[in-house]
Image 1 (cartoon, rainbow, N blue to C red):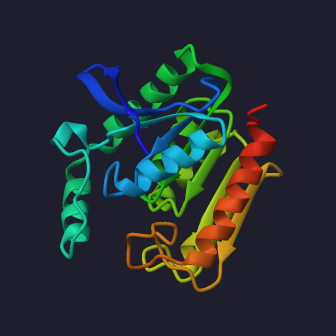
Image 2: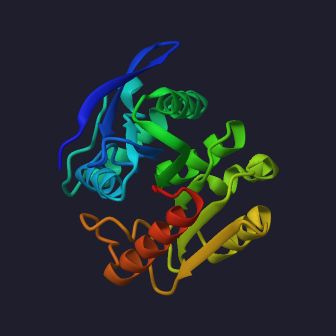
Length: 231
């Protein structure tokens, strides 16, 4: 599970970015936006999973301005990650993510459309990206910032898939209901998982839910296969 190290140019300098290529060497593109722990081994695994499906994948190190690539796993990792996230300029992070999307579109390996997929911190960031640029698809896993970005919902026109656990410790069912209402359109799919907490897709985190993770990934693969096919 290896990625190439590339960079994306921003107004403040080059941003470190990870690149995964599919076996065929070319395909549609996906910007993979990290969870709060950075480009962790879990995010790297998902990058490889997406490449194995036939996508060209780029994951920018969104915490690069504060000098962090990933937060090492351990008993204090969540507190450290939340502290780092509070140092991040959200608008700059959104601009960096859009820059990654545009850089991905220009790569010679990309044939077809380009989409955005994000987890946790990145789920909200992907939503923001979809509002201010034009990805061909959006997949958001428990986007923790979406509740504060609902004013952008009318600008998100890409077909989208949202995953939320109904036992999410950080996003209440009431908040999820507001998000569902704000994003509702014929080409929006909103999936919930009974008993699943936040970050249920991360096998290295305490809230991991194997069945919810399996089902959400199956739905993600089917959604991408329909909306951003690799062949």
